Length: 617
Ligand code: G6P
Image 1 (cartoon, rainbow, N blue to C red):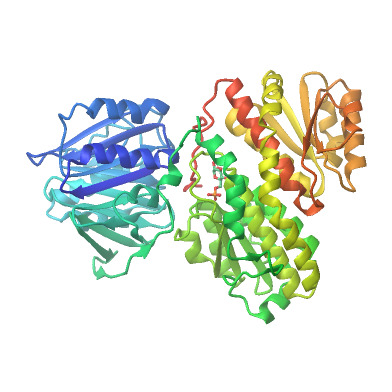
Image 2 (image 1 turned 90 degrees about the vertical axis):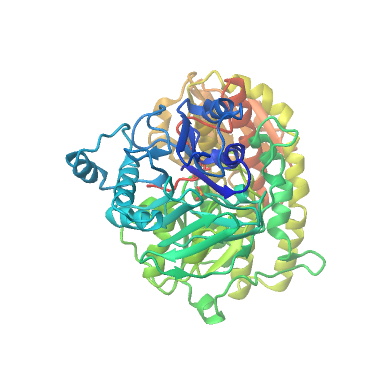
């Protein structure tokens, strides 16, 4: 949503704030800004609202060393209220300029609060909801509160989920942070020279790997070498830091031109991460010790509901298909923003599995909280261990793909699919649907998966020419059946996200019920048709598209000699057991979107109007 970074320590905060913001920039890149308390004790703020160039322009603006100070806050914004420009960029100051805040979340009652503040004579300089916080905090400080009290009191006036950091000229050695609800996390850490807080652990790793994740309803005050926690009543609380498993190097681009190409290339490794310590290839067994369900609970499951948003929803659809296939439990995947509001029937026999790379997506967390209230046993499959979702779920299956920076998710999806396959095997075995020999057979197949994916990545060259062709279309149709449907949907999503081409994923069997009306030379079709029982059906669908003059890209299994007689373009993915086919077809679709984005001159890492972590509805 937005990225926050704050520093209090012995060094000049300015370059450190810029570096910190670079680490969280993927969360929002519409604007960027910092506030530091300078040697005279005044707050100096510099901000830029230049869309994707904001952070670089900000870095250039403060790069001459003129601005310095030991304490400061910074923010990168994904605009929700108010257009992208400098005045709407964070941090926002109180009228006197003695308080500055950076905020993540939506203040739902901001118009009401703004009216109240305007009536009291305060002039607003931005169109944001966040500015009300600056004035509320500023007013309390002017009335004699310390910064912590002022931030707590401001938070008590607002409705909606919020994460905020604030500095005050009256207390020039501290930064206060506060979290209410799920508007993105705040993670805090310290070493002897400094204390830091940020929206994301990765920004803290240059300082420490021992971190504290702020709970909703917690307040933190940092100063050089010190971190103090409080509740919303202002009473001091205590919690030991945890050691994070994240790796700073993993969040660098290395030799790759984009994070997306790096993350696509890392997929064989990501799959290995998801299998490490779980699949024993020598013994042909699989264990998931993280699953805290009793045998009775597992036997009682009569439905699995998988939930998530975006790519994570498509991952869940794959999960539903593989759980139903192996464990024979009715399974559905549902969009969290729908699940949370439709009062679904969930209970102690429904296993809810949430998928979320970040563990912070607002709708996914709300759906998870709903499931918890309904008494459903619940697991979460995620990358960011320690994030809020791990605290809502009964058990966590980490996907261990390594930090993903590109907004469009790739390696998290493939590692989550691997984890869901493991979950399906686990449930199937625990319920007696498959025996040890069958487990051995599937685990043996999974051992080949990293190499198979590596082979599929070799398709990069072939896909490049094709991308130039697809870049000319304004409309694309992606078709799949069965376990290939979530892959088709994901292929279309990727193309929309980063190439900005209108692309629709559809069950191939649905074409005759509407999509056929759009077929013709103006729309190309990408058909996922690997070698399985549904292949003949897909061939018929491909023929239908051709009969109406549409260009077809067929994604088939190597050795296929049939489809080339009908389709215009054929991409052959490695042959593999049927259960693993979705992993193979996914790769060329990711590559195709990436290459098409490049052909159109788009920046795949920073697609317009999108952000990696969506912490508001
Ligand atoms: C955003 C990201 C997507 C991601 C989705 C869900 O839309 O751009 O890449 O799939 O959020 O995020 P999550 O962190 O819950 O997986």
